[in-house]
Image 1 (tube, one colour):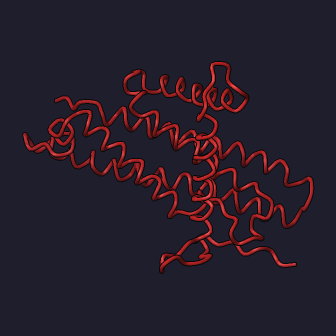
Image 2 (cartoon, rainbow, N blue to C red; image 1 turned 90 degrees about the horizontal axis):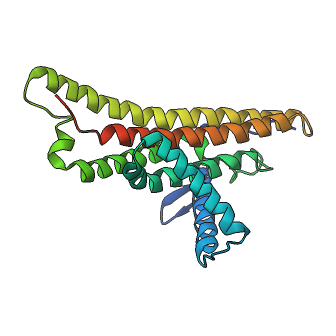
Length: 236
């Protein structure tokens, strides 16, 4: 029996009107729909005395909100960035858990989206764009852009260029950090499951759950931190 092929790039499953559907994209889309309907039906008929599902999801959101409050230190900023940060955490943690599904590396349609650089890069770019849109709305056009384009003197102009480069580096680091950790974990799980079919892979499964949680928490935390930094008014 040969070891399953390990590929860095996502595998194309089929096409829709010429648009390629890869295994990582398919799993990301499936997870998105699953989470949407899960939360939708859990909160569709909210009760004063909540049932188990409503109580569980309210606990998750309340815990994340308190955590976001600790990071921002400002209730108003927490309310502004929390919907994005909470969505990112829940979504990323959910797709990270796909690594522990039985059949990983055997069935071609099973792949954690976080182990695909296209997915993590797209997620990082989209999240950072939203952060800057929120910051632009909060600060106004002038206060926002003078942080990156200040012509009053050469030093401030140079600092603005460095700020712009920093935004690019932040986005790239978000994508690569998530991709690198999850790809390494996926490869480890495939190899250990192939060599040792029973008890030996179990510690690695629990490790990957922990790593998936931590990476989702880091990603969403950094988005909140970047928002706090970006919405600070530039001072001379």
